[in-house]
Image (tube, rainbow over all chains, first blue to last red; front, top):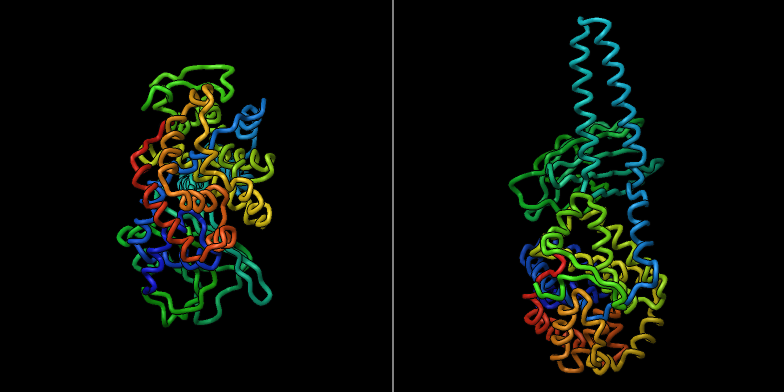
Length: 242
Length: 210
């Protein structure tokens, strides 16, 4: 049996989640690279999707469905980042709007400032929009000598844009730069250089690559400036899989 | 869609209310629109089945309820990623629930409990052929349950056991081999054959929630 036959033989085990931990890890590594296996697994998942209904239904105890309803509707399902990002952004927008109102009343000569502020407001709204509509939020921690930072991705499937935040990392050494890459079925696609400032998070808005199939994940690397090309060569600092 | 899915009633059959076809067909759309009544309907319709899944996998009924609650939180929060009618809202919810239950099982490393429970259900093949109580047959989705049970019932007994341990008890291949006292390769072969037959039998089922 060659390596690929092993994966084919274990498709149903993967779907049923009956593989061992090490086998599962192999699969997770293989799937982003193998469209045939991904398709086969999707088909098996679809065909077996009703199998859990072999079990008999269980009558919920009195009050349970109401408890679930109340819990779901009352619970603040917003993730932690929304709890501070949204109020902060809202406050910023209100402040900006009030400031703009006052400013515009004071002098029409400040119209250029108004235009700049409007752009900032639009940018802020756009940022907030991506974060609010993000269908996935991923994060990875990045640790090194004397620092502990991370990378967060807010993936908005509707607009096909990602908000990427890199924070807590030291400035890139001379002659090197942080680079963000998309992981696609046929390989890695260049995203953008990330200008890291140790005192503030770097925030990027990136449009997903269109011609390379679905994006499965992302990678942050440290590249030597003279080596930067269409594929990464440097040390990988973080890797996130959707 | 069969007639049985046009109505909703409690598992105990104590109360009954009807969903119009229009209401039923738009359940997913209304969830997408954040219609809280749609959430209540979903909870009413799906809870008995999700509790069935979690209670079959977890020994603690409180944990089983927790997982169901988590599944509805996920459904409400991420309804936009649920597949449409073709993929199925209910299958998605079942998958989310089952995956959460397996995560819980494995996080707690409850191998001993699982295998003990597996022994309890060693006569699964006989148990599933027990006659249904009349009130259960009125449960929305029961026709799907019937079809799935019939498909499992068509499998040879040893394949039924393997499917039961893998899919409904959350055991891994090696745990099944140990439990049944058979080689690992035999477990994999039985499961592959069984799931292949089940795919053929269940692949055409459609979502009854829509």
